[in-house]
Length: 307
Image 1 (spheres, rainbow, N blue to C red):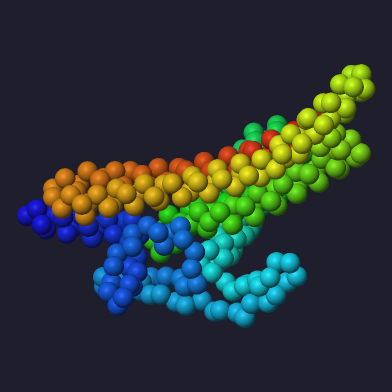
Image 2 (cartoon, one colour; image 1 turned 180 degrees about the horizontal axis):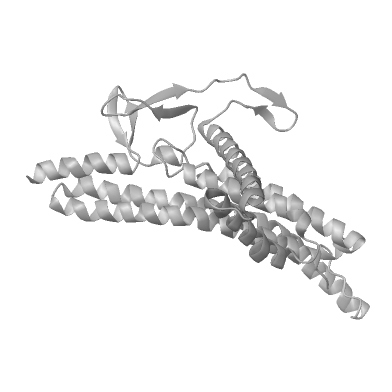
């Protein structure tokens, strides 16, 4: 009885926690979580072959080219690139569908409802409660960019929860790229809002002090101001990457306990792993929200920055 229960829990865990087999030396070994957070040049798709229930497809490999200073650059598509494209396509399709449905419903009954109403409520909340209050006056121009960030990160996170999916935001290169794009938007917003005054966000020059203190603080605080600019994209990068990776690692540890116990006690880590996956669904929304919130705060700070 115990053996049958153990086999049942193991099989259900493999399905719920996205067990994906990895071939090593010709032997099938169970790799439960790492395919969801690691990148590769192959992608898994659902396939009715028991017990794997998936098929591995090799992605095309392109010949690398050489750039000065950088060296060889390989632009071959990887698993995370494919899932980012899927996330982008999903965002575009769903939002266009919701916008069209909202227009039809508004003309027909005066308000949106159902799926379109839910998307409209989400968009209005992010715009009115997150973006505009933090970006400040005349912040409507940043709404499209920040909403795009929110929905793109959200769907990258959500696709990582699905079986055979992959968490692109669990790749530090992806989160770093999003943070760097945000960094340039923040700095461009500062230049546009302050003109030459933007230099005050880098070089500390307090005109109210005497020349000696002014020069002394300039030498001390200017490097700190510059480092502070770099810490913002670094914080965005690590926060998103670490949170999307941590949940999968916790699930991996819990599922590993099932094979370690080999007894009726395996039910406890199984239930805990399922609970962590439910928490991961919440974290997917939360991390997209936090990235958008912090980006809005950074834009608002530099638009109003002064010394």
